[in-house]
Image (cartoon, rainbow, N blue to C red; front, side, top):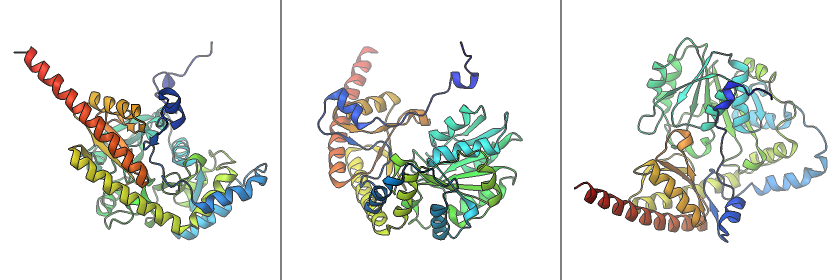
Amino acid sequence: MIPIPERLKTLQPYLPGKPIEELAREKGLKKIVKLASNENPLGPSPKAIEAIRNCLSNSHRYVEPTSPELIAALARKFNKKTGQIICGHGTDALLGYILKTFTEQNEEVLTSQGTFIGIYVNTKKIGRKLSLAPLKNYAYDLDGILKRIRPETRVIYLANPNNPTGTIFSREEFEQFMSKVPKEILVILDEAYAVYAASYPEYPDGMKYDYENLIVTRTFSKSYGLAGLRIGFAVAPEYLIREMYKVKLPFEPNYLAQKAALASLEDGEFLQRSIQTNRKSMARLASGFERLGIEYVPSFTNFYLLLFPSDRFAEDFFQECLNLGLIVRPVRSFGIPEGIRINSGTEEETTFALEVVEKVHQKLSKQNGETKRVSEVATK
C-alpha cells in the first residue's frame, strides 16, 4: 500500500456550494435558486458567448503559454507592462503557484481567520505552516497580522473585499500596513470582488500600487460571469512573474476561457448592467434581513454574511433552505460556524430567496424559542 503523506491525512479539501443538479435529484424540486457561490446571475457576457462559439473549431490547438493576446489587453486596461501579468485557471490556481514559487518547507503563510478557504487548502496541501490572526468585527485586523509576523513568515494573504464577510480595509490602512511589512515578505492582495467595491472612495485599488513585494490577484469568475471556465490573473513586479512561470502549467488558461475573457473585457455595457443588478439585489436583501431581524455584516461585494445565534441554528437554516429549493453557503470551513453566506441574484431570484429566508427564519425562531422555554422549565 502506498503511504499517504502526513500533510494530507487531516487536510479538508475545498468543498464548493451544492450543485443545482444534485439538489434536484435529492429533493425532487422543480424550482431551485442557487445563491451560494457568488456567481453573476446574468451569466457570461453575450460577447463572451459569441467568442466561444466562434472559436470552438480551433479547440484542438494548444494555447500560447503566456496568453499574449489576453495579457496585452489586461496591460492596456490597467496600465501595466505585459511582463507584470500572468494568467491561470482562476485565483485558486494562482494562489497555488505563488506558494509553490515563493515558499519553502518550514516557512509560514500568515493570514486571517474567517477569510477565503482557498488559501488555507493551498497552504496545507504543500506542507506549509499556516498562521491565523483573529477577525475584528468580521474584518481583517491588519495591526493584528503585523504583530504575528515571525522570522518564518514568508507570505501574507489579504482578501479585499474579504470572502466570506464582505468587509474591506481602507486605502490608508493598507498603505500603512505595507509600509510596516518587511520587504522580504510577499503580500498577496486577492481582489476577486474589486469590481463591486471600486465605487467606494476609501477602497484601495491594488492595480494602482507597484510595491516590490506585492502580488494582486483578480478573477473573471464573479462580475464577468466566467466561473465555469476558470480564468484569473495576477499582477506583480516582472521579477516575480518570471519566477511564477517556472511552476505554472504551460497550457492554461484553456483556449475557450482566454477568448471569453478577452471578449468580456470589451463588453463594458454588460459589466455595468451586472453591477447595477447587484446593487438592486443587495439593497432588497438588506431591507429584507432588517425587516426579519436577521443580523448581517455590511458588504462591499455581491454577497452578505448572515449571522445566527449559534452554529446549530446556521446549519438548520442551511438545511431548511435546501428543502425549499434555495442553495446558500454555510461558512464553518472558513472559520465562521455561525454564518451563512448568500449572494445577490436577479429580481426573480431575489424575490424567491427572501420568501424562503422568511419562512425558514420564522420556523427556526419559533422552534428555538420553544426549545428554550422547555429548557427553562426543566431547570426549575
